Length: 167
Image (cartoon, rainbow, N blue to C red; front, side, top):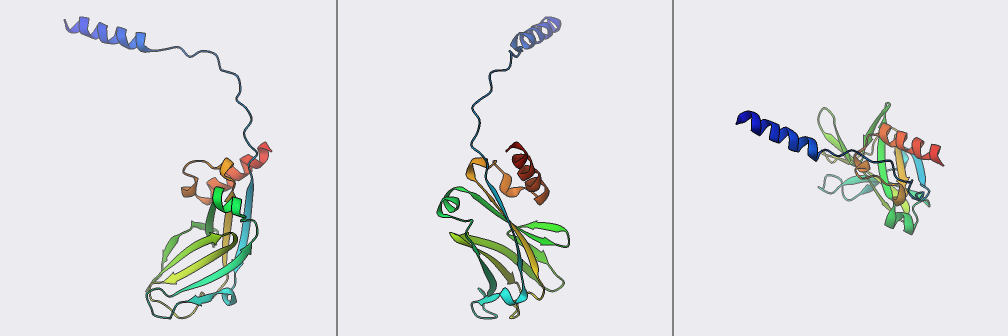
């Protein structure tokens, strides 16, 4: 009985397998992808205080013109920021722990502008002391891949390179 049941299960399994047919015709070409990469260095003098020092909402902001962010881009594109520090890319937002405090780095954007934000857990009243390098990717929505907002910098650069090679 057990052997008959085993043969029945194996037989049904084999019958359930399908052989794939020939490959179908290629689909229509996709829309051309559009990528823009902005490398921005924020100098210490670029930081402006936002709020009152030692208040819970106190932070430093540095805004830059970004004409690449049109209304269409704002409505349809994916805009991702990275902080670049000593050869390491940190996707934004990100929190970096120092000995006695943490520092939050983030980015916001609107039509024609990108703004970087730094907020310290100790609500420091002085801006970051050295230059901070940021990289902003603006990716047309037609070129967007689900989950790419979580990609590491290397994955993003490989994808941009691949899309540029296809053009």
